[in-house]
Length: 164
Image (cartoon, rainbow, N blue to C red; front, side, top):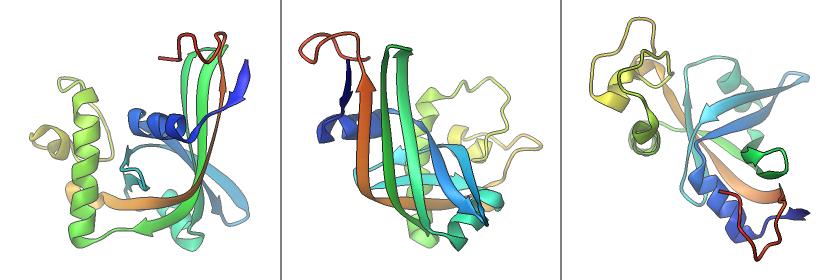
């Protein structure tokens, strides 16, 4: 059964997932890129080193955000939201990074080497590995959402088991 997610289901997906995709305009090209994120009910919080993604969003702040959840090809949920990119500095950037750390840290395998764009020490309290971003390199931002929509496919009825 295909259907439209209710507002509370959209919020649940946005709160529970941690990987989403930003769609933005890079010159005349559409650019879609995955990010780790945190959501506070109003905005998506992310981070990036200076590069194509940040330059595109700064030039064209109106962006799209997509997140999905899959159990299998017949049981999934997808949310698309639109909003405005805002670079963060100072206390707002510190708060955004704290939100990201709180959201992502429980999901990290702390003994695995990684090249995640947030400094290794921000997530683990340890020194950064060579080749990973340092705290000064990561720039925090938010996307303040003003429109959300969601779709699903389920092999059960709405009163039956839901997608996990």
